[in-house]
Amino acid sequence: MRFKKVSFKNTDGQELSGRLDFPLIGKPKAFVLFAHCFTCSKNLKSVDHISQAFTQQGMAILRFDFTGLGQSKGDFADTNFSSNLSDLKDAYTFLEKNFEAPQIMVGHSLGGAAVLHVSGELEHVKAVATIGAPSTPDHVAHLLDSGREELEKNGEAEVNIGGRTFKMKKQFLDDIQNKKDEGVIKNLGKSLLILHSPQDNIVGINNAQEIYLEAMHPKSFITLDGADHLMMKEADAKYAGSMIASWASRYIDVKVQEEAPEGEVWTRVGEKGFTTEVIAGRHQMIADEPPSVGGADEGPTPYGYLLSGLGACTAMTLRMYADHKKIDLQEVEVKLTHDKIHQQDGENSESSKGKIDQIKRKIKLTGDLTDEQRKRLIEIADKCPVHKTLEGKPEILTEEA
Image 1 (cartoon, rainbow, N blue to C red):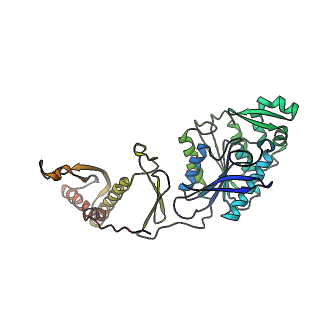
Image 2: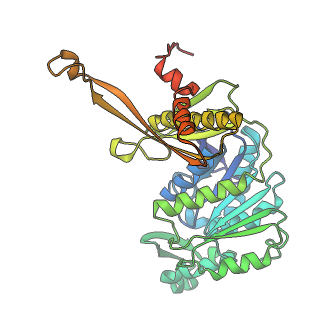
Image 3: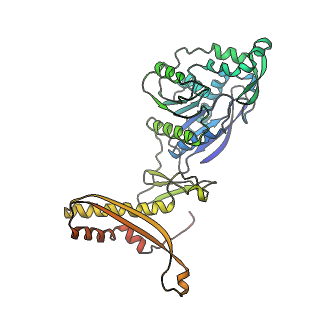
């Protein structure tokens, strides 16, 4: 992902730290605002995977640290759920003033409850997604049990949450307990997607049911079966991100659709890794390398795309020929492999030490075909335009753009 470190002031004048992730190529189709879980930060690994899913769909996403967390200024002990809502509104305003108002909001855990409470007030937000969200903010009160007695007695306490110690004040408890639903879910007025794991032992699955039953249509639910609350498994986070990004694409108002002119293909790789975005016309794809050579395996390799082009062209050419000749060709399957092989100019020749590219192509023809028709179709395969281009050793001219 391309990204930019950003910061903005909250209502109290404290500087909040954020990260804005962009698509690899071109202008974003839309902007997304993400709210992290209680006591988490924008740098949680699962948030990386979710953000990547949005950038691969051509959207930019802002994630930021709430007041007193991560790299943001302020004292966490002085914050509460209401201040989180205020921070979210400030993040929305930052995007609206400096880039474009977010059309999608995503919240994880208590961040999910926060986006449900605030998004109804935000004009440009069209859709909201929650991940492992409690149906009411006071659900997180049980996380403070380690210091609950001291909080009630002294007004503040050291509380252990997820293996880390935080200083909390009783005003946080008072705030979440006083933050009643007041119909915010029922009157949301946005498209809603709820994601939750049945195995979530921090926020039970019943919370998803309560949110779903309270919400009005359009609403959807996706189970994150087997995932833990923080989605620590990469596969779980990537699945959640891809589902939300695909769902969100239905609701965004695309102001800029990045398209390569006919006959052009655009590619771009970021500053780390091999994951590369490919735009061919209005189609967006991802190329990568396998982990064995340092890639992330997010898409086919460049040679995978090369063979795909030859295989697709072969199948299309045979389809066109069979239709023209009215041949009963029902299906074509093409399998291709690429290898580097030693030249066979002679056992003792110097050139035999070199290697050449070899592409093997196997074609399976299905249909009521005569032997003569099968033979002719295999001959026609060599006439596909991509085949001719590869054999013709095309001239490649390179210049700096």
